[in-house]
Image (tube, rainbow, N blue to C red):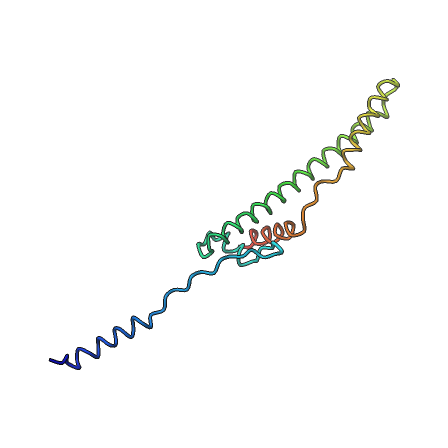
Length: 144
């Protein structure tokens, strides 16, 4: 007994469709850029808390965002420290002008020298890539 043509045609069609079915492409493995710079798309995806990123990319972007935020916080703290030291220096110099006792003048002179030395110490250099990532992040966080 031969199978009817009515049964064979749908069976062949189903087999052909199954054979032609596209498997979803495996996501390519994330490779961080050699220069370490974030893209606007990565930052926007991160800020939107979207799950479109691969886990490895999301971890990398999260680490760069944290690094950029820490650089911004550190720079703000350094500015405050420098401003405070300048204020202390002005106060010590003013006090020095009013002192008559040579021993007290010498002590204030030592304090002035120490504050000046501290002011000359440069804050740690922020790598350009971290500075660029911080600027990009700050700009994109301000955008509505």
